[in-house]
Length: 313
Image 1 (cartoon, helix red, strand yellow):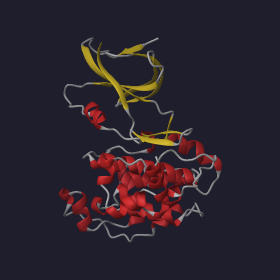
Image 2 (image 1 turned 45 degrees about the vertical axis):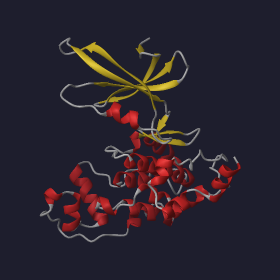
Image 3 (image 1 turned 90 degrees about the horizontal axis):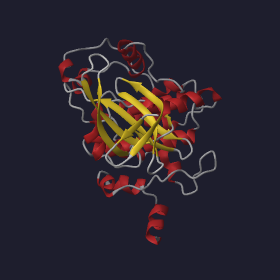
Image 4 (image 1 turned 90 degrees about the vertical axis):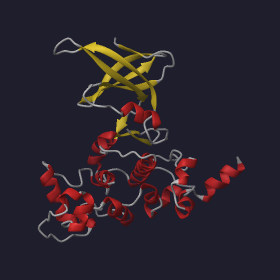
């Protein structure tokens, strides 16, 4: 059995959870504490600066995967036998990702691929995590269902806003919102619904293409994407429309999105999930998070019953 040794702990390696250009992720058990963890092993290519460790050390949020430990190791290259340096990031273990949840839910024949209450809950937590990382000057460059980790027992979601709109739509439909085999085909799918971006929008997206123009194509109501799901809540269309804007500055900010009516159910003290359980804590906003919100948003996001409970305690 393989082990990863950090200065403080010894981790017994289990099955491989995933691998690719990003490295390899395995599940493991900390022998000293018994904690179930995930270990991501990444080659440290001297030609590139890897900021993953420094970024992970900055992140402290209930909807961001927690860095527990890390260590550097060396191993000979399979190509030439030269020593190569690896970084092992020890993170909290989450048993599933959103891609698998969508895949498992897809065949159940509901109005939405995932039960609407879970869509509300998962989307809320994703937006809250995005709001936090944006507030400290970071941007998630690869937001997709595979990279959204979840635990269906606790219904806690972690992040390991256009992309957010696409993920949200995929939770409803059970398939990608703008499916294309190539980037060009995907762009055509987007324009068929949203219409051609004008010169101002193109310039704001990328000033290098300020003089580029698309053939004129009229926009359609975003609801056309969800025609196969006849019972989709209008509040869901409202959120998707607010996220899916060509110009980044016109997309709704994460904390503002949390105040939209789609999440009002979550703010009800009596809200329960389909399995009868209460949702995980949703209103434990830090002082840092609250400082990013307008007064109106703060008032909306922290229900009165939560404030009363804090005062009692």
